[in-house]
Image 1 (cartoon, rainbow, N blue to C red):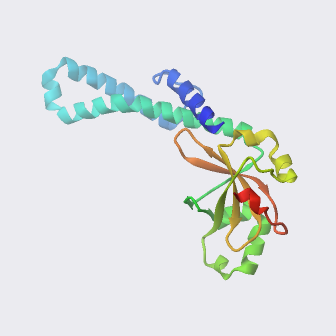
Image 2: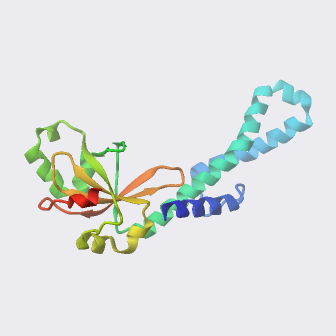
Image 3: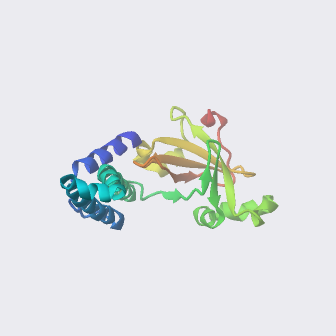
Length: 213
């Protein structure tokens, strides 16, 4: 679903004239549109006046590059804005996990954000680890979830039909703790991954090991 959505958003953005202002355009798009108009005017002037082009050779090259690059930037930015609108509607039931850093095996969540996402977890971690007082973030182990395996009924009920929207599902476990999160992963048109907390199993349960295969 994520890849199809990305393609749809990018196609829609590409079909819209970059010179026309649309309702969802933000300040960045408008700045680029102004730069694009200026670049077009300069390029036209340089093409009709070779002497002027030789005198301002560096600016002529810069204007040519802007004319080539800015339409793509505008379309990309519009697709990102469209993704934000889509996510606010279709993923409104889920809290986004603000990740400060990540790799394939771990993700780091800032402590203040973790306290908001899972107050129970942020209360229990200091009881089991003295590192809580010193660390500015807390690390989570990431396990890819095989969709073919049965999810716990409470997680399915909580996630409702939104599971179809996500590129993949993962189980995250806070380092030093046993409580897992069910996390949905989406990729924006710019290729940035965004993470959503679908279900928190709580501190008293453990996850079925088969789900992590």
